[in-house]
Length: 222
Image (cartoon, rainbow, N blue to C red; front, side):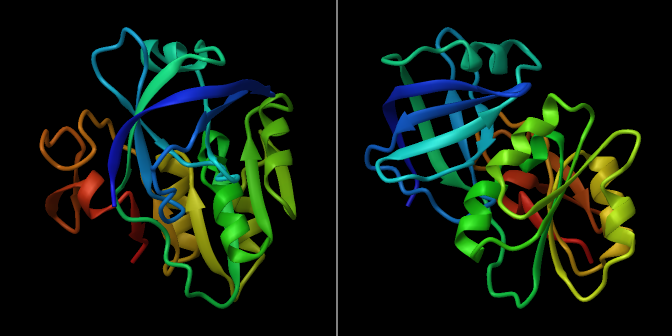
C-alpha cells in the first residue's frame, strides 16, 4: 500500500558518478522491484520519481544522478535532513521467470540491486559511459560490465534463452526490444504526481496514449 511520509536521511554516499541516498524506512513498504517512489527535495516544488535501489532492514536506498535542479537538490541533502517519500507506485517487474538476465545502462542500474536480491543474484549485463560511472556496478552481483564505445547490447546479442529484465535510456531499451522481444522494460518519462492525476508522463503504447506511471513503468517489450 502506498504511503507518503517524512523520512530522515541516514546517509548520502558517493558511488562513482552517482549518489546513494539512504533514508529511514518508516512505515513505507519497499514494494516490488521496478516500482518507483516520489522523492520531494527540500525547496523544490515538484518531487522526482526514483526506483528503489536497496531495501536493507529499516531503510530505503535510492541511486541518484545529479542532472537537473531537482536531482541536484536531492543529492545535496545531509544526514539528519528529512525528505517526503511517496510510494511504492506503478507496476514493477514480474519475478515468476526461469532464467533472469538483468540488462542496464547508466543510471538504469538503479533498481537492479533490489531486483537481484529478490531473484537470488542472477547474471547481469551493465553498460556505462565512463569508468567512473561504472563504479556503480559494484552494487549489482554477478555483473559483466562494458564501457562506451562498447554497447551493452553487443554481449546481449550473443546470448539466448534468457528472460531479460532491462532498464536504461530509451535507445538502449529499443535495441533490447529488438534482441529480446519478450523482455520486461522499465521506461522513463517526466512525472509530476506519480499516480495518474497530471498526465505529464503520457506515452504512446501500441498507438494509444497511456500514463506511464499507471500502465508502467515496467512494460512487456512485445
